[in-house]
Length: 277
Image (tube, rainbow, N blue to C red; front, side):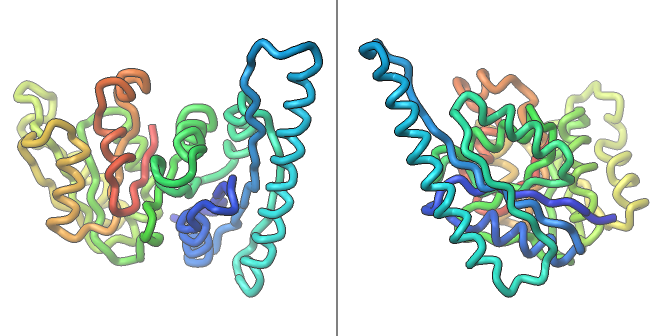
């Protein structure tokens, strides 16, 4: 099994290139087609302007965004010279409120979207991740600054709670899990009355085994406020090169206000994370 269509998004000439570099590496390794979306955003806030002023501001910001798009296109053509992957560039300038809808229409035919980690330099990154997960309903491989695409044959850590989001992430990650040497199925404080209480994680271990992946079930105590912090600590201890996790088991508003596994992973990740829901 392999990804056949991989996508990534560029929005700023100053953003880190880890997402693009990882997308190129994965496309090359899996023989996938790479779609690179060059998208610049025109942001115009609504205020009580004099008649006609708002239209002028929209036109000016749109013009600036289009100039930024042209620079990105030129930079990308130069960057991709010599690359052997099959790739295509799709360039657009959109108004801020239209960004999510635009990405939903374009990315829904991708097998995987590769993006830089949010909460770094790029102010659009968190919007891109949520648009992919919720609107386009596509799995996202998130690459922190200074990281690269996970190599074949490495150690992968998977967060597992028997939920729909965790199962979706496991299925989405199969092309990478099949290439892994071993996958840790991490279960944190499993409920004592769960349906699989006698063999927590056993069904998932069998699922991965039938896909050719050797796995180990690891039960961990919840010693940190958020599950994401426990997964990151475990990944550092075992040298896992990637974490697989379901995304937003709670609502986005609740995670934004109170925190949660997804938010802590997105804010603190120091290695690639594959998320789906």
